[in-house]
Figure 1: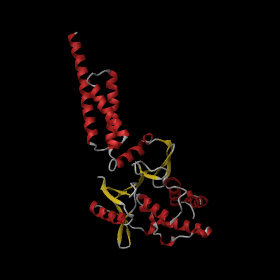
Figure 2: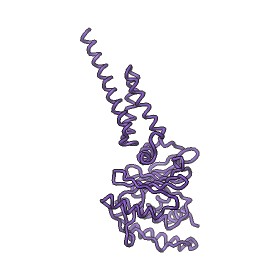
Figure 3: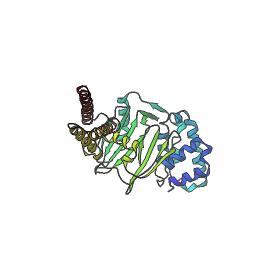
Figure 4: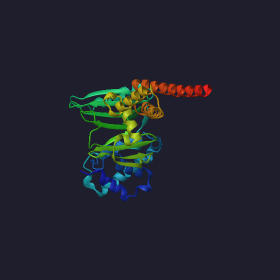
Length: 326
């Protein structure tokens, strides 16, 4: 069967720079999905699902669909043996109607119907609104692996029914609730970025693409999650819905640092105050970006902030009193 790489090579020969739509598809194949993946109609459908989340391609859906149809036709004309699947039944971008669903309950029903149709025997599905017009879909398999998908409230018309347009983040975990190794993971980043990565023996390897063209923005290899600020925070924002923070080493580290700093403020010194300020900033960042709304973190951050202000105020007041006495 043809691989994604083979079709990407065909697009390269056509010169992707000559067409924004072709460049977008080429970058998607190169930067976001696994290049050794078989080239099937699902690859093109998934590409449309991601591209049509972007306003640019919703406004230029005709150009996108016609460009991809033309490039597929030229590819199968040169490689007729590659057309061994039902490519004629793809609904291309110029044939897809996209709708924003404003009622969360309505979208939950749309998503539940679609996700339930994909369940295997023994699977369990749970849908959770994240509070920012997105729905988290979690499928726990019979053997304990977890598939996580994040959907905005966007659907497409498919015949007589509505279907979710597609996830913007798609993650896989093993039975230990750790990212599954050697599997391509996709995470929606900030500022119109997509983070595509895999966990290998020597760390995380991945690419950050940006904008409506999925242009490569950053590459990282042999990284730890905490080395990549945006990846780490976006990952933690999702994981708080299905992984107990108490089992997260980073969360425990932050909690311990906040608690220790509050205790040491009982006997403040310049070094203790400096460390408390550093840990307070780290705790505030974690509360805002990685664990938003976490009650324990909020309590500890508030307590340390108050203790730090009292220690500083007390020190300043004591110094002022000494000057008056002198």
